[in-house]
Image 1: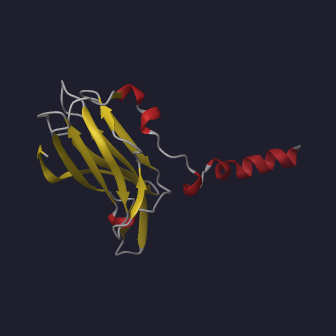
Image 2 (image 1 turned 120 degrees about the horizontal axis):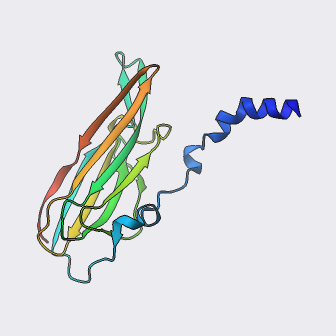
Image 3 (image 1 turned 120 degrees about the vertical axis):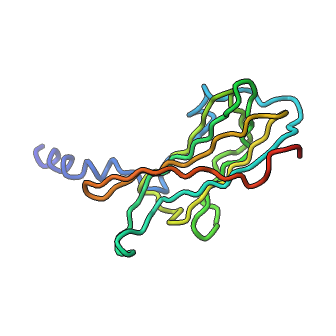
Length: 175
């Protein structure tokens, strides 16, 4: 019995770590059900997109040390009155290869609602030049959404956090 308890104590921290490949996929529809509403029946007359730089790894100390960061991508509907349709959330690595696609179908965010994608520290598939593409649409004029990535990580007793704001990839306007 003591050997089993000793093994559990010794291996416990490692058993809790889930390999990147075995991590469950993000399910926006379930995780953010309170933030979502029905897709509008009207034509989506306005659309736009964002490029969001993200850094799952950063080189430090003249490149001799790599620090890994968790990344949280947040998409905020800045409209107080209109639903925002999110058509695509895609994650790319340093070489521009798509690593992950987070939507199977478009979703609609309620006014002032938010959805997020979390990439854990041990998922370094994005590398030092990771990025997201977020495509959105609406039925009419709408406040442009706020899209940003928050990176958090550390080495020893030093902790770092920084934000990367999304940059529009095309002007919002009629299709």
